[in-house]
Amino acid sequence: MKPFSIAALALLAALGACDRKPAPPAEAPAAPTAPVAAAPAPTARPLAFDQTDPAAKVALSLPAEIANYPALHALLYDREVASLRTFAAKAETDRKASDGKFPWRPYNRQGQWFLAADAAPLVGLRALWFEDTGGAHPNHGGASLLWDAAANREIQPKALFRPEADMTVLDKAICDAVAQAKTHREGAVPLSDMFSCPKWSQTVLVLAPSAIPGKVGGLTALIDPYVVGPYSEGDYEVTIPVSAFQVLLAPAYAGAFGGAPKSPGAPDGTVSVKMDVK
Image 1: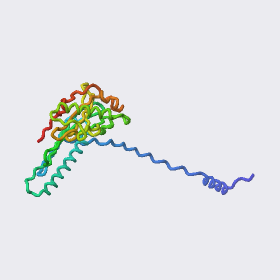
Image 2: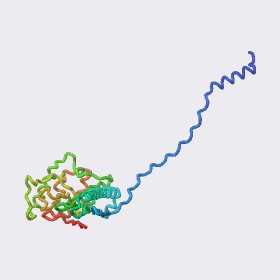
Image 3: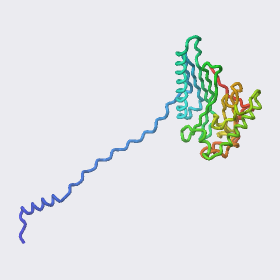
Image 4: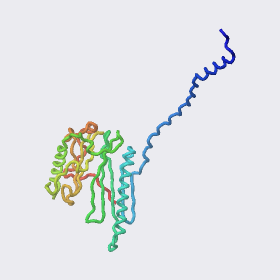
């Protein structure tokens, strides 16, 4: 056997080098993942708003308890102030368009909100509003807001009930309560085709506090003037105890209800909360 020459050994070494694959480059270390920033908390809003100019006076008052729910506070304050500013802008447009034959009487709109009930997870607010645009008489009425504190969002009244619930049960309870309240109000016009009883969804529903602390004892239906009688008859406020509609409640909120309403109101359906009109 002949020994390999130096040239042959060099050739074999070169061929072996060609067959070897280069080592992959080292991977760069992964950059650290930045933490996801939490959603900023709503900026604290005031509890009142007041604006007066030559065209209109508008004002808003919120309950101190609303500060315990910053998202609710921000939503309601921003919504109400936007509405009041729109009202004031319309008043300014009307003032500029007036013929000047009579002195301008500034428009007026005011709203006062109150805590109606706080029964986890439900928070209920109610409002009285007053509006004067220079007509034959001022107008007034009620409003409400339902808040799910666990979900941190507003809900509509229909969310309180099961989707398949027979809501004629609540309709009848409200109608019977209005008819009974009319018997205690002097000069009240009986329910008829002209002034028929509204369905539950045509009223303003407010959570009624229970005699059991931390529970809702029923629902109060606020019914504005002209709905079940002439303007001179005024508005109605009737409270339906939870026992009359317990079977209708959605499971998510049924636990918030219990006991009897703490303050069912006067027999004639009058409102006990008074509004300080300035």
